[in-house]
Image (cartoon, rainbow, N blue to C red):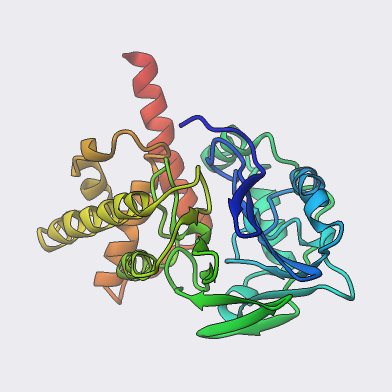
Length: 318
């Protein structure tokens, strides 16, 4: 899915920065202008990409400086660039559940994954080799909340709505009611397969329904191009389908690996990152079997890597 690098004017003093092609690490940000100040939605995966984004926003923030930064969740491609925005006059906001994971250890964990001499390291380097995680100083939120929080951004209401645990434990969507604009974080991947790290998958579906219930003219996903409600429905359809198919195979006694291999995903063949099905089916199984030990991010990446590397090898043979 081809589209241009941002910034994009969404109208009513709302903007977005899109990072094509919206694949691993290639996330989007937003800027909401009020009277004399702005709110930034998310930073990017490394300092170089974050600096480029901030420079592009500079004409907008010159007279409306960033006074609030909202991180939609705890994945590094939405907050590792925070240090370039932080300062005594900037409030960094996230859900309490997200903030608990936004640590120096999480920065080190992701940086270490690309150095691994195994299938996970090979996969991470293949999808994220154009990012440089050096020099990142963990810069966590200075304000946290649970549930909902309304912010005043230069006289404008901005609603923060916690919909996690879903994609991650603390997902937040950012709604600007007067502009009918929403920034969804990784509740939405447009063009790529949805990904459920934390779940349960039912909460990701519920988050899509929450977005669909709002009066909106512009929807900024966490990854991929701008969309409308048809894009939200497409994500929800994928999640509902995977949940139903995984449930059936769980009841039939299939293993996670057998379930992943047997689900026909041809309806969604146009989506990139097909390997995410491995993590998504695992999430359903973990939800259905409370005695099953939950796998960590390294193990989840391992399942995705196995799927993607096997698919790549099969493609070469063909």
